[in-house]
Length: 68
Image 1 (cartoon, rainbow, N blue to C red):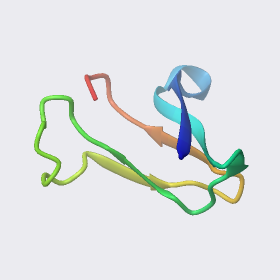
Image 2 (cartoon, rainbow, N blue to C red):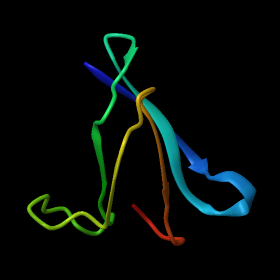
Image 3 (cartoon, rainbow, N blue to C red):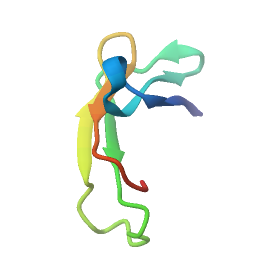
Image 4 (cartoon, rainbow, N blue to C red):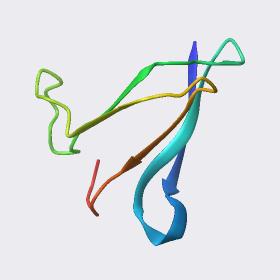
């Protein structure tokens, strides 16, 4: 089971997502995090944004305002 923590604000007033991915209560390093537009129900579409977790399972992606 993969557990993700999503936080809706990034540092210094930027918009985006930051969080940490865990697998069996341990950080999930180098995992790919994909962000899709909310209107895109078909997951065969390309993701809007992609990032990878660091060695501690943390990620940060800046995004414009919108529904994801």
